[in-house]
Image (cartoon, rainbow, N blue to C red; front, top):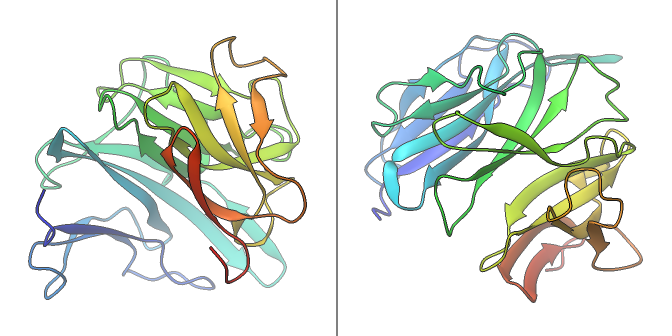
Length: 231
């Protein structure tokens, strides 16, 4: 509701540890920034979302990773889902009540615009086969319930950038092969959870040919997406 208030998730330097990682906030349109959540010099933030009905409720995902010339160690104790109910002044990590306790990697999240109590998350399950299991999860804002929305037994695809489609119970996501293609490119896919997380017929690919990036639903039959330098 206030365009001068912006949150920015900063993952940090690619090849080294650095203390500038974290979640930043400005209240004056970017003139000044404050670090409102810091994890460590190896863990930054990769996603942030606000409750559409209450901007004081903020969700953010932290991600720990170490990259070298010939390796990527993705995930660690710094990877977590966080919630603030006071506009970023204090934070609580989401734990228990169905939320897996395993070590996590990168996480994406999106709040259902029709009901701020419903949140979709996708996270890298680093304690299992990273190629075979990249589920879409859904959770309530208080962390009381979490469940797999799709992909519990459907491996081989990385489901990225999941966003709820306005006016429906469906989700638009990018299905990227294997560990994920460059820039998270893949096939824009609509997923329905009506028949549970293992329904092979649930995902419907929207296009053929080359991969796209950053799919965004405007309505049930209207989507934005990028391919190369085109929209």
